Amino acid sequence: MSGYTPGPWTRGYGNYVYRDDGSPRDGQSLIATCMPLNGAMDELQIAFANARLIAAAPELLEALEDMLTLMGPLDDVEHIRRKQAALAAIAKAKGAN
Image: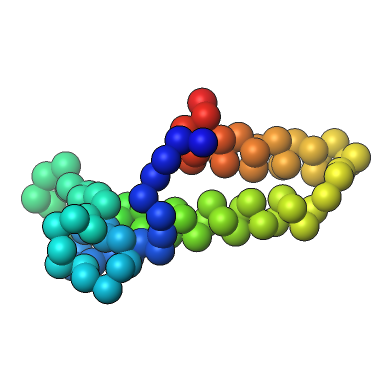
């Protein structure tokens, strides 16, 4: 597995994402900064939304892995397609593709 900074992560002020280790201002805990493409307010709102999504990534990955575990073996074609999509997303998150 490709390594990543363990969660939980949190969105700090605006467009900054930190590891939620009790010290959100510590530069060592900075995960990402989402920058707007320009100074327009809608681009700033998009940067904030991207930061929220990134902050949720560790929890989303864990929830998806848990759901797949609960699903067990599937034989319905649509369920198999959905499971394959979930497995592909997990692989992408873990740097396997």
